[in-house]
Image 1 (cartoon, rainbow, N blue to C red):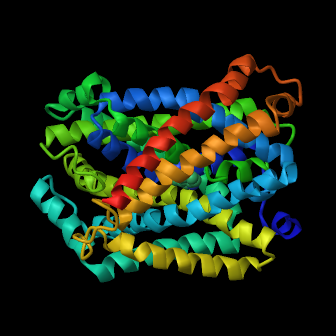
Image 2: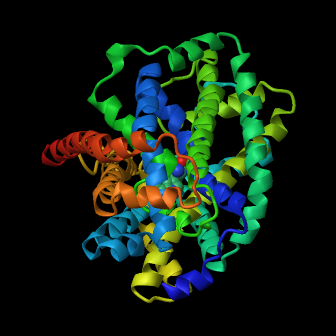
Image 3: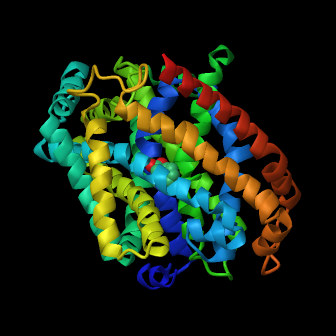
Length: 455
Ligand code: TRP
């Protein structure tokens, strides 16, 4: 582990940890994935299930992950291994998961870069849904463009991870994150003031219970894991750099709060506008890219807003993608003794190759289905959000609850005599609620995938 401890920067301050972890959590998952997943899964009904899972599963696991990281002071694989050798595989699963997430995350990261350039050229200045849909479709139908922009996104991620310029990122985050927050709040206000916006608010906040089905439940759980970056070792690794003096109860409370706030505001920025402009709410991954330019076009200074917004989305996406690449790279550095620069370049190349079919999924590979109705893009998404991440979360809960034991975890959490008023509830959730609940949903996801494979 030595080399990694030397080459990986540690946080300059508690704010550094919060920024980095929040940076990992807040990303395309909030701005792009949350609004369209809500749109595809019945609106308010999905949001309700999401909130329940956030409280019962996401929040307790966030604390468990930070605690495990800080207790062992090791990267994900090392953290599990140092407490019980047989558990190293959990860290390994996380690394594998990182490859699959980045493969499609970088596709969308590429879309953001393309949109930023189009915004600079002033090409997004319209509220016409057909025109906006054409811009999106033309872009993703071009294999060269999709792949080129995906490569660009991965390349920047690679540069940041290998050059270790996280100090710069930490400083930049202090400006970029608050600016992003302010911007999406303004965009949300604009979206909410559009004619007919009320329909969107109703859609988002009034649950139609008849819409709750197994799929909605699986997707809500997957979205909680994805959005909080939980289940693949990112938080464990980041927690390992946190100083013993810091209060992890507070840290693990701020992050889900902030993450959920950003997702909700992104929902408010997007969904009312979809209803106002009469766009299709269940259109899937293109939702943000088609709707938000229309909102900007209806604002004064919209041209500038659009540019700044895509810069900030790109930044948020990068702070997330580096967290994933970091977990993969540090695994090879720590466990396989590979040089950091060598492992980073090979991993990035493999992810790029895996990502190519994902980038082509909505273009020339549109009619190619990998499994049942799933193309590469959907497959990577479902495989990670609905299977790998819940599996990682399930194993994390079992590990902290029964192997490390909640007693030892609580000692770590309250090492400076911090008051943890919810300690009994937390132990109860980690031991008796999270494992069975996640397990049941996971089994159903596996069943669903199995049906897709055998069909
Ligand atoms: N949470 C990030 C987002 O919302 C994505 C992400 C970063 C992630 N690291 C992760 C998802 C680890 C799962 C696991 O965009």
